[in-house]
Length: 332
Image 1 (cartoon, one colour):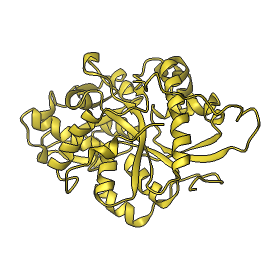
Image 2 (cartoon, rainbow, N blue to C red):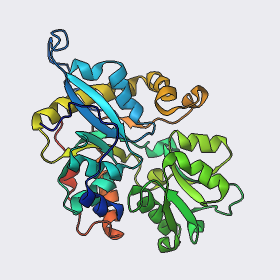
Image 3 (cartoon, rainbow, N blue to C red):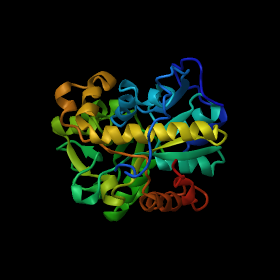
């Protein structure tokens, strides 16, 4: 079993995997997520599990399960370990530094294409549907930038959290759809928390932001260029849960069953999720009340994932068509 028994303070990345990747609604209501009878009451030893996650809003769903003792009801002692990019969590899994990790589907596609032994174990969060009219991630610029639509990103510098991943992939498609040349856009890598300052200072012309930073930008006067996920693949999984290929199947089942319950409860309790944000992300309580929250759930919209898979092949992030079945795991 690959689960940790000591505290992890940082993600040690396996060198070869890092080199490869640096180039690079709610679940079914009928699902039985009842904890094993009597497990918590009997005081059995908990299995320590380290979950890699990003310091962004969806991680509050995991923290919700920790603070409310839901993971413990399933015999799990869950610890979070953070990274600025989902692509960094892929080699961390391979190196054994984390047991499970959240990542966008494109980073996983790239990792699998490179031969890394990883697997998708469940969904985690997804974007909003088309009829919402807005979304949880978008491209932002300053009012006086001269950027009015995606085509205007030509010959501009755009910040994304990870190069050759879901951010620049979808922005390239936005530019393409607007009649521009995506090859004329310069992408630079910045952590989400660093993007607002980089935009205000003129270091970059536009940023691809997620919550809570997207709402923060809007409130500071930044202008939306486009909701990239909403325009390209509404309802797409923004992050899924993954594990190493050789992870213990019994631990995967135990963790996924617990996660389904955690995410169902978090989805039904948005106020409870918002209450976690100030301590988890250092967020102003007033801002925590207004940010847009992704849709929690372990189900995966594979039709939307296929859109990203097709784009990854078109832009040569992967060398062959993605096996979409690898993004449709059987849930316990």
